[in-house]
Image (cartoon, rainbow, N blue to C red):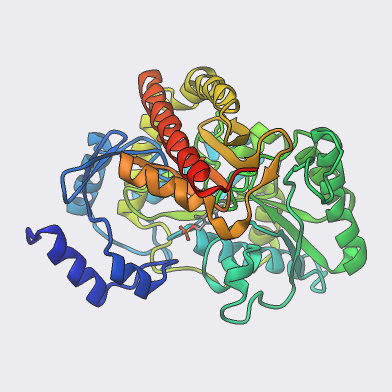
Length: 463
Ligand SMILES: *Cc1c(COP(=O)(O)O)cnc(C)c1O
């Protein structure tokens, strides 16, 4: 790779590279930050600035950067067998071994996996698979899949349709047919809306029953599945009330609807258990995974298929007319195996559950006292701070101010990657993080909040 200076990289980037989810012109005018290397939980840019990556890349680098065993696993597999497919009645050892290991680390009802290249492809597989399941079950009219507003399930046609991002639906004629949405379980008791005046747990039941109302509106005999993230990630780390998921599960069982857990972010230890559904107390029929399965070192995704669906597909389904060139890619599977081994050997799930997760929660409880912070929540190593204009009343800032982006600008300048989703500032740092690194991250967060507060005072944005 050539060694250019920042301006040269930025010029070539602006001339040729269309970035995902980006206003191309605005970025070309401003110039990208060029990230050139990484180690542990830190990144370095082409100007030599060190950055604490509190987003684990894009919710994926759970074991941190520079892990030798993952690098060696990829290198060995590239030398041994860089690629072979699984279409022609063939398989490769890494794919077989990973399928077996995934069956071991997932809840007991999961014994089969369908591999894909990403989370989006995993969710495309979900759509194909649940509709195929109901065909085999002799109820082909069960086609409708219910997702949630502000959910994120990827950016392919099916993934974007299952998700509930209005801006994505507005481009490209989405959602595709027979996908509908209910509202998200976002508890905002101080604002006008469905949760006003309710306790958190009361609201969890109210929000879950929106699913039942939607099923009754459509007719249960037309509904195939419900899909949700245990905790909405890209939607702003929306942690549902504890009452929500058990009630969702009850409703799905009562109406005989498949329950799909999109574990692309919450899987592999993020919430302090292996999978988010375990933290939230439900057992789905299908789970999408990606991101953390390889800690992002190489792309891999897929679907964990529970016994109910697997038995129908295997025993009665005949040929399933679906698959990807890279389903079970040997190098990706080899890296995933090394990643799972590292998670187990370093006891990272326990580390999040017993040590750094509670430690981060204690820090966030103190951040909640900051004058700009209306609420501070964590689950495992995911955290969200909601910035408010009037702390006493919980009044949000006017959206035009873009308070989250103001704060994010300070983070960028101060060497911290913290993401803004509207007025919510979110983190999902690598699971290998030590307590000292949590202290370091929270000190940076506090500094950026203080700088944002100064801006707000100066500009007269506060109540
Ligand atoms: C990132 C994400 C996806 C999409 O995964 P890609 O690998 O980007 O296709 C799907 N679901 C959730 C919950 C995600 O966070």
